[in-house]
Length: 163
Image 1 (cartoon, rainbow, N blue to C red):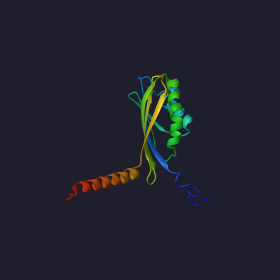
Image 2: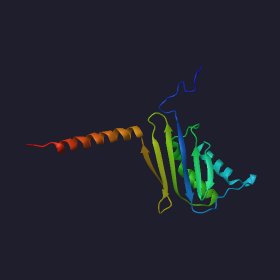
Image 3: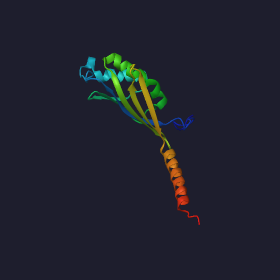
Image 4: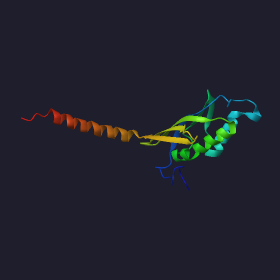
């Protein structure tokens, strides 16, 4: 019998990730409607949750679709990379809009977790381009310390006077 929910889990792989971002589209065609049969936000929620197999918080404002996820859910960067292009295509087909830009941030909630930043654009052929940047603060800090030590060594060498 399992005593705790994490018994038998690989702790390096089981952690929450906070997500937030937006997709920007070309017009104000997508609007929130309160009609129960045609609630745009509900249709959008259903579309994204069917593709990603997870419920995101979705909000529409000023030609942007804001999407976020709290830490209670497990949704990893490789799932996002697999799903986002399909989500964009389906939104464009369903609502007859063109998504031309997006930004997403993800923060892993674990010790020495990574932070991811995704930039979504399109090329001339209307193909979706997904660029990813990764930041790990511990790695960044250790690299910064090494550079500082090297700079100090060079400074000390310059300060030496040869007689």
